[in-house]
Amino acid sequence: MPHLFDPLTLRGLTLPHRILVSPMCQYSSRDGFANDWHLVHLGSRAVGGAAIVFTEATAVTADGRISPQDLGIWSEQHVHELARITRFVRDQRSVAGIQLAHAGRKASTAPPWEGRARAAVGMKEGGWEAVGPTTDPFTDGYPVPRALETGEIPAIVDAFAVAARHALAAGFEVVEVHAAHGYLIQQFLSPLVNTRTDRYGGSFENRTRLCLEIVEGVRAVWPERLPLFVRISATDWAPGGWDLDQSVELSRLLRQRGVDLVDCSSGGAVPYARIEIGPRYQVPFAERIRREAGIATGAVGLITTATEANDIILHGQADCVLLAREMLRDPYFPLRAARELGHPLPWARQYLRAAPASTKAR
Image (tube, rainbow, N blue to C red; front, side, top):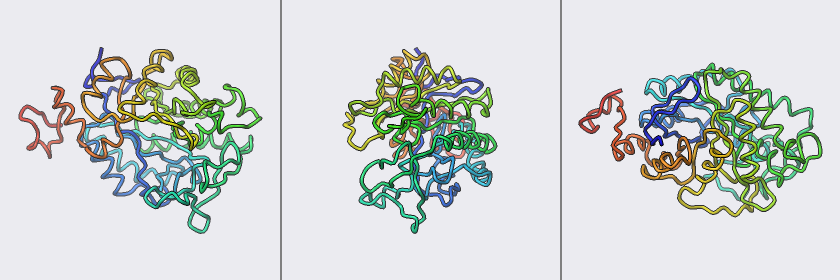
């Protein structure tokens, strides 16, 4: 079996190892534009040796942002600042990835540090009308969404494809479609949220239609040589909701449509979910999807040590690991993990004086 520091090839892209930076919202943009914060935040993880550095959830439309401070890529004007970041990431011999997203009924909310007692951001405060599969809000204090008309959905599908074109122009080499955490695509997937009676609601086929149309639209404009990921919530953690069986079947359909890796998270659709949190608690989702759907998977969820990450790969539970909070605590986790496991990675030459004696510069 491969180990954590074996290369991973996905289409025409070969990663030097299997530690990736997971998308993490920063709530630090104005009008969707990247800035110095994003350059330093993402760039420092590239200096730290990550194989792929993913942006936060990046909105494909202005009203698809989680908050007014979200990163966006709905306009060609966003490309310039994002390209500045991808150039720096590439100079560190890392790969720049972008997660494309639409928040749906969870849009127009405040950053978490402003408190969640009243999550909705009103029109006078710079907010906007949220949309979703129905008019049900996520929970009290969240925006009451407008239900999307059937005829409006193709425009959202097109927005993802346009965003993918912008991502390519900005220099990204991996796109991930965000179909998890209770945002728009998962809102359509989950039977607890999606109670529509048109062709986008009801049966498994109908509830997965939006996700598959978006993936088809993105894959049609994304180069064949570059990989496409999809992040899913493998389970709603609630009775009668989206579950792992449906995730396996969806992953099979994604593979048939040119998706290269399923990034396996969970939860977010409903506020009353009972999530059994613990070390590596979401890894079994990646393991089963990998085995039964025949597609590469990424594991996430409280993976905090080099040994844990390596064991996941050694035991065939996933093809890579995506770290979030541990990468916030330690941007140089890959360099440290490589040293601990005896597979030294090259260091940036500017930092070489602090590296182990046998380490090479990149």
